[in-house]
Image (cartoon, rainbow, N blue to C red; front, side, top):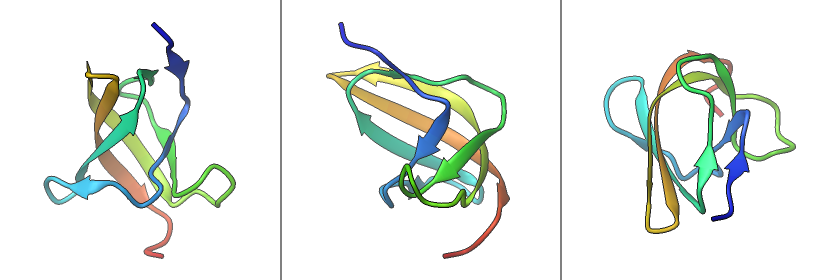
Length: 78
C-alpha cells in the first residue's frame, strides 16, 4: 500500500467548512499526518501559509484520505 507522509496541509481550495473553525479535506491516496500539533495550511505547495491548523480526525478509505482539522489561526483571508 503506497503511503505518503505529510507535514503541512495543502488545500488547493478544496476544503469544506464543517463548523466555525472546523474544516474537512479529501485527498487522493493514503496520507499520514501528525495529529493534534500545529501544521501550516497552504493553498498550494509554493504559496505562502494561510494559517495554522491541528488535525483532529484522519480517515482512510477507498484510496482516499479524509482530514478533519481545526483552524487555529488565519494569516490572511485571501
